Length: 157
Image (cartoon, rainbow, N blue to C red):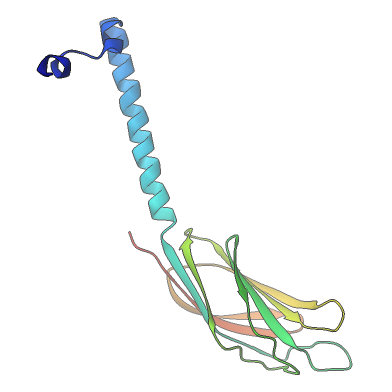
């Protein structure tokens, strides 16, 4: 067994000294790249985003009635869900929060505000922001009202 450990691998015994050096360098470089990719992957995907305190003012729905608004929330490509529908509310405050895990640094947080209708629902507007570390309260001006929300983004290094 000691003889096997101390003897060079079969591949290297078939190569010239220059080829052995090149093979060793290539192997070392390959391992370095794999280790770096593993570290980058862990660093990019370890964030947590929380969205709460959703409210709006002066929302305008159909011409004849107050809006029945709700919100859909995404962080990056991940759909976080939909708020409750609040009937006849031009100035709604939605309960609850949305949570996202394994979020990539500098992802885009997107909120779509919709008016629930008997026919197809109508989008009242969209809010987007590139997430930043910490807690932030945002104001988003739509064509048909204003949306307010708070989000926090935390990640570890």
